[in-house]
Length: 349
Image 1: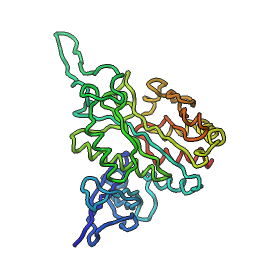
Image 2 (image 1 turned 135 degrees about the horizontal axis):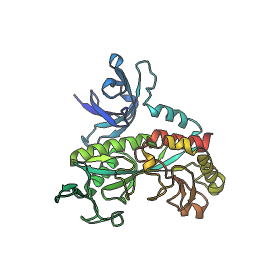
Image 3 (image 1 turned 90 degrees about the vertical axis):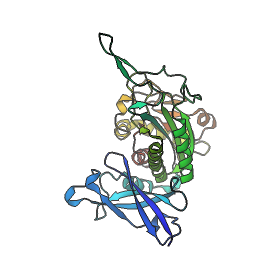
Image 4 (image 1 turned 180 degrees about the vertical axis):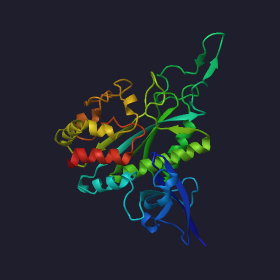
């Protein structure tokens, strides 16, 4: 009898990712989420339901090819509901989908730059092991690499640490059908970035969340752990962000800069505090005004300025149309919240 292995993936109470496998008997293939049944899990074990009423329903929303099992098997992005059909508090997808159901003719595009740091045994890849050495006096900690500078977009075993993970993740995402558009080594050693997009509306959140799940699985194979902490190492080291590029159809047409992009940026500035509140936990340690960030306390924008809250590229400025980049979101941000809020503030409010 034919079967399909469907890996149901959901977001837990802490922004982590969980999954379990459903064997769908009697099918050679599954081409859309609506062909799959709802399922459930024990929400008391994920912090999403009390023990005396622990059943959480997961509803399939979109499917991807499974790059690990391959063949006809699939990964399934789901969201979470009570048995009565109400979205549970950690289900941010439901609210985002409602926002994106408005003004669909605007065709909102997102391109998200996901930064992350790879750790092995509690130490970022490429960092010397921290060793306490005592010479009859105060203990000295040895364990810092050379200063930032040679690691960004680097090549070489002395400066690029974890490329095998980044490459394997990119290939797995492409095989899954995720619209990954690039990868690169980042400024801090052991830090990498990949880009997802352009994606339209709710697809941006679906694809970024599934790409994170795939990264977790790839890291399992390589015996490393991925961190989305926006400031994984204190001190004179770059943090990790999730810059979010945005445009609508009118913004992508001649004249879009003055007529649509700049007014949208000004709207974002008026609601700076509201956006910061959902742009990621611990973002205050990253948005200091140093290390290619703007201060968390104020809003700014500029052309080609990576120290601004929002950046407009030179290409967009010269052509008079294109997109802008919101540089404030942290690496651990929820893309459902961030993308829908950018769209709501700039196009619906």
